[in-house]
Every structure is written in structure tokens, then in C-alpha cells.
Length: 361
Image (cartoon, rainbow, N blue to C red; front, top):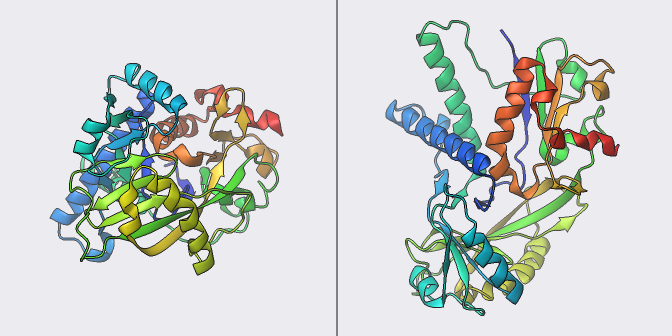
């Protein structure tokens, strides 16, 4: 029986509500929705079995409100119009004017009278989502065992590892998915072309005595900054970008929070002026693992890294990283092809564009 060791640090911002926009990549979008459905089903299954509360997810995984993207420059008008015309059949994109946008989000500001609306676009809360995926893995192992496929087990081991070689004797394969912290492992230090970027997001609440609440069914907003709507009186806005930061703490000081708000509020106000009435409650942060820029774009880093670890090539150590700010759009499809490569001990199953990063070393 193959054992897989996975080290997981949340990609991107901890406690962030990532905005997932299916502007391209039909297969990525399809695989992502598949995993989302599986994760939501796993939570429902555990709740129906009345399992202990500490094992359950106490937050919604997904907000299915859609997303509105208003044009903020003349150039945006052309780009958004083209996106609407060439949208995927799997995810509808509508080009709308100010009147239609105002029906969706009262008091929205549309300086160029143009926006695209993506009714199927969603917000994902990554921490509960990852927990739900682990529940789904446990459920699958139980179902396979009950169906006669014995020996299917899954365990979550929480342990500190100083070097990858510490895992070498116990596992058939080790998948490294540590986000921006991947190069903190001695074997990978200085060998990954990752660019670190710290981002801060802010949680806002509308005081009870103010009536300009966010619409109960209004979509989230994507602009120069974004608004993720968690309810009529709760919003999350983001995000800042601080390149080359090595501050991995999710905690945000009062000074850093103040600087983030000074950057974010004007950007949000440009499309949703009523944000000025909302009160700051807390800020959270995380570090993105940004991949290098290439002629093909900024592509994630996948592949076997045996040569970095012990010089041998046995398809034992694998990297899954550099997903950047679009990780939730890529993750399901990338995870699928990486797992196929790991189980087959065949790196050629991974598109060569995603393993070409080693040529940059």
C-alpha cells in the first residue's frame, strides 16, 4: 500500500475569502467545482452523523453569490467586453451597464458605465475548505473498505520535519505543498524560483444604526481591490501586495492594519462609496508563493525533486507549489495530474510547461 506524506500550509492568505473567477481554463473550473461539491458533501455527511463539533466545519465553505467586475479604465471596458464575448460555456459572463449593475448592488459606482457579471463565480473560504477535503478523504477510505477494498486508511500526522530525508524511510512518496515556506526546507533552500508577497485583508462590519447594508443576494465585487460579501453586515476587502516579505505571521499589527486600510479603502470606495460607513473589525495576512514570470505567463511549479533531496531519481519527492494568487482556480486540476504522476512514478504525465522551472536554476 502506498503511503503519501503531505505537508500543507495554506496557499495565499490565511482566512482570506479568495475570489475564484472562471475567465478561462474550462478544465480547471470543472475540476474545482467537482472538489467543491465533494467537500460540501463531506461536511453534510459528518453533520448528519452527529459527529463531535471539533471535527466539523463551523463556517460556510463557499458563498455562491456571483461576482461583478466593473470597468475602472477605458482599457478595462474593451477587455471586459471581449471577455464576455469569449466566455466559456461552463460559466456565463454577462456584459451589463450601470442600471443593471445597480439592480444587483445598490449604490455601486460605475465610472465607465460598463461591467461584467459572473453569476456562477464564487468565493471560497480556504481553511474550512481544506478541512472538508480531508473529511472527504476519510469518507472515501471508509467507503472503499466497506466495499471490499481492504487496507484503505488515511491519517493526519501533525509533526515538525527539519529535513525531507527524515521522511524517506517511512513513505513511498512525499508531496511538498508548503506554499511560500517550501524553500525553508534545507534541501530546497535557494533552489525554487518563488517570489514571496505578503498580503493583508480586512474584515469590516456595518454598525447596527446605519441602514445602507449590503444586499442579501448582492454579488461580491472585483475591482482594483475586491469585496467578498459574507452577509448584509459583514464584508471582507483585500488585498495588499508587499513583495519579498518574509513575515509569515497571520497576525497583523495595528500599524500594518492601518496602512492596509489606507491602501484598500480608496480603491474600494471608487466602486462602492458606502464602504466609508463600515467599521474595521480585524485584519489577517499571509504570504503568497508567486511563480516566476515566463514567456508563457506565471505558471505553477510541479515535478519530481529527488535530485534536490538526495541526488537519486526514484520519483519519491514531489513539489506542488507556486500557485500564486490564482491557486484556487488551478489547485484541483493540478492536484489531479500530480497525483496521477506520483502513483505512476511518471513525471511526463505533468505538462512540460509546469516542470520547465528547473531550467531557470
